[in-house]
Length: 423
Image (cartoon, rainbow, N blue to C red; front, top):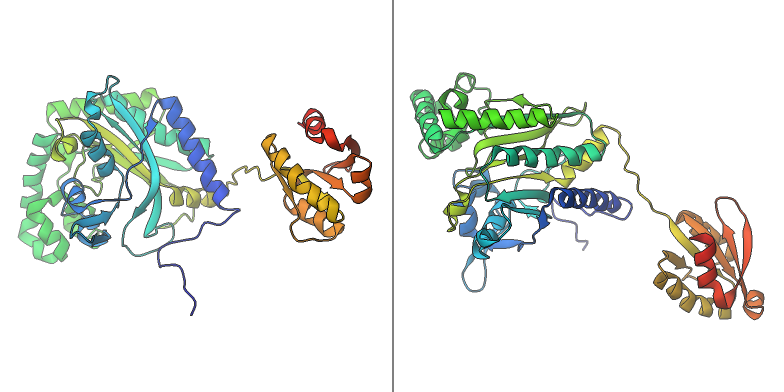
C-alpha cells in the first residue's frame, strides 16, 4: 500500500527549495537592516492562547485549528498564526523589561489551518512575520509596512497594491459596533449562521464574511471611518503622512477589517495586481494590536506587526514571470579513473570542502564520459581529473568547464594551488 502526502501539504524539492531559501535570506537581511531580531516559538501552544488572542468568533478558531489533547489531558493546538505565540513569549520572558524598546522581533516557520486547499493556500504553510512591541508611535506603523513592501520590491515584484484602514481605538470601535448591530439586526436572518452568531459578539467580523459579501446590507454598512474620534483620526492621518514621506503609494479602504479580533487602529494588506494571479490576491496582512499583550497577561503594551506567506510570494513571482537568480554551481567535480585514484579522491574531496569549496565526486563507479556528464549537470566550474598515471606522477589535471582550458597541478599541493589559481 502506497502512502501519499496529506491533503493541503506539499513537498518542496531540490531545485525549488533554493527559491525558498533565497526569499527567507532576503527577509533576514532586511530585518537586520531594520533592527528586528529573530525569535523561535513552539509549533504547538496551549489552545487557550489562541482562544484569547485570535478571538472565538474568527474562522480560525471556529473552523480551522488543529487541536488535540496530549497524554496529560491538556488541550494543545498547532499554531495557526505567529503573533499570539510571539506575544505570549514577550509576556512570559518579560521582554517589556528590556532596556532597548520597542522590542522588534521576526519569525519564520510552518503554520497550520484546516481549510479548503486551493492555489497558493495550504493546510501547512510557511509564514514570515514581524512584531514591534512597546511603541504607540504611528511612525513604527509606517516602518513595519515599509519593511514588508521592501521585501517584495527586493524580490523584483512590481504589481503591488497597498491598502490601509483604521479600526480606531476602543471608543471608536464601540461606537461603530453599535452602529453595525443596528444596521444588520433587522435582517440578520438573511445572513449565514456564522454572521448571526457574530452579531452580538463581534459585528465587525460580519464585514469579512465570504458567503454574504454580495448582500446589499454589506454595501451600505456604516464605515468605521465615520466613527473615528479625534485621537484616532490624528493617528491615522500621521500613518498616511509617513507612508507618503517614504514614497509608498497606498489606498484607503474603509472595508478592510482583517480576520483577527486583536486588531485596532492601523490595518493593512498588500495585494498582487498581477494578471492571472488568482482570486485570492492578498500577499500580506497586518496591523496594530494594542491590548493584546494585556489580554495574554502582560502589562498594557502597544504592538504592531504583519505576516506573509512564502507560498504566496512564490505564486506572485510566477505570476509576474520573475525568475530568482539562484546560484546552483559547484566549484569542483573530481573525476577518478581506476580503483587507487577513486580511493585517493575520498580524502581529496573532504580537503576541498574543508578549504571552503563546494565539491563532489562519483559514487557509482561510472565511466569517464558519464562522470563528465554528471559534472555538467551539477554546473561544475572545474573538473579535476585523476587517473592511475597522474597518481604515480603526483599530478592532477584541472579543466575549466566554461572554456575547455586545462592545467596541470601538483597533487600533493592541489588544495593550495587550486585555491590560488581558481578562487
